[in-house]
Length: 182
Image (cartoon, rainbow, N blue to C red):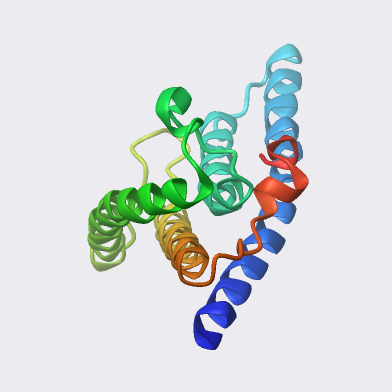
């Protein structure tokens, strides 16, 4: 049980810190989009702004996802879930998280294969006029998927600890509120 608590604390701590940093990614996105508007207004549109905005958004979204999950900002079907007792919610969460873990595992497998392909063939590039390398965004996606997988396992561990001890694990989303999330 002590190891499980340590795992939860380490994963939650890392994802919480990274999520708080990634919250400021919206300003990077705003900067890129502002530059795009300015460059179009002065008559020399930049070729890189659209793709860069997409890359920043992917990083913002995928690296902030584990933090959003931790904060309870994910969408749930509350029609039945909201009426359940805390113990039944933990059982249901412990069961359904395996679907998420399976999905993330398949996503990671495809992401790793795509990233390897990107490195193997001389640095895969986007077919746009700017032609940026694609490996940085693919690596970012793989890292984000791994962090989301670890957060899903942390949430499973919290449910197991609750079911075993009857004491709720440290759940940031229930303490601080989801309004703090991405």
